[in-house]
Image (cartoon, rainbow, N blue to C red; front, side, top):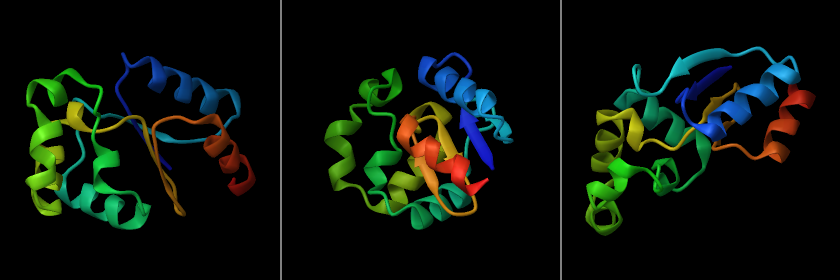
Length: 118
């Protein structure tokens, strides 16, 4: 499984610690230095079942400075995906990609389901 995170993010640190404590193997990728591509985001969006807005880091400084709350409603999904691919700091984190699902953010209950899958 692939685990995308920003190393300085406290939520990402909690998620990483949880995975490590539960001995769940993953490939680590820094979302800022190696941000998701348009193609990856499009695939994950299609697989996830989430609304595309869930992929945005709505509490991030970049999201706020770009005033995306007001701009996103008038954008197409394709434009939103291109925007997300332009900067990893716009993307909700952490993201955990497994064979069966995409998990955005860290909620322990969702991560506990991983133990049953591995």
